[in-house]
Structure formats: C-alpha cells, structure tokens
Image (cartoon, rainbow, N blue to C red; front, side, top):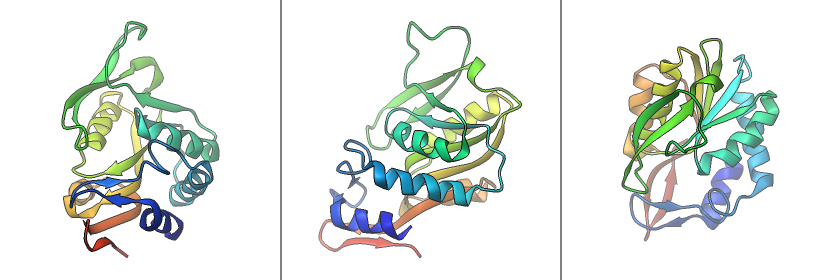
Length: 191
C-alpha cells in the first residue's frame, strides 16, 4: 500500500535493525484518515470472505480493527492481555510472547464472543515473529471457528513470522512488508 509506505518513510523511525517506531501515526497517536484507507484496503483484500467478526489483540490493533470492521459491518473482539475480574464465564486463552515488550502474556477472549459459526478475520498492526498471530489463531481454533485470514498493517519480512505462517497455509495479507531496515541506510520495502 503506497500511502502506508509513504507514512513509514516520512514519519517512521528506525531505532535498531529490528525496531521500527511508528507511534506518530499508527500505535500511539493514530491517524484516522490513514486508518480509513487501511480499512478500505483490508475490505478489498478480503472481499470474497464472509467475515462475521474481526479479532485483534490489545492495544495497538484495536483502532485499526474498529475502522476495518465498519467496512465489513461486523463487530470487533479483542483479546485481553490479562483476565480481569469483570470477565465473566469461561475464556479461550493462549500464551503470547511480545517481540516489542519482551514478555509473555496469557491473552484471553470470553467464550461467548466467538463460536464455531464465526468466520474470523484477524487484524493487527505488526507481524514480526508471528507470536501474536499464532496466539490469536490458537484462540480461533479453540472456538472451532473458521479463520478467513489475517490482515497485517506492517510486516517485518526479515523476521520470517509471516513466511512461516504462510507456509502453514494461512491467508496473510500485509499492507507493507519491510525487507530490511537500518538506522543509517533506512527502510527497504518488498514489492
């Protein structure tokens, strides 16, 4: 997605060869006009799927998932990074190691929000090693729901999580795939 790549080039900051900071438009301060274009693109990419729910993980995926959900006219369910006192009933849960935060969370979704009749589209901001996606896919499988696909805003292609998931047969659509990045030389996108 050319518009997204322009944003990344203009406002993204390469902190290290593994860390891309995009908090000025994607995951701290959110550019809603950009999110709107991202939602349209995910709708185009998954137009043939009969999506009934969008699933994401807190917190950075929620805004993108909500805008995208408007185009599918479906609700958003997000996996919480910890079970809270006000979560009622049974939950689906999966352990997820965060690349950015360097810690493991037991993410969970209340069982009544996903069931075997659902066709789920997973939406997330980043794909690096695939840990978050694997956790969300695990939750979809626990619910015996159908996974329609995974929409990713930025994939770090050099970290191979996307390649591994595609080899397993999952439909992954990434709007921008970064093949390499360096604080000195910048970002190289896959086309």
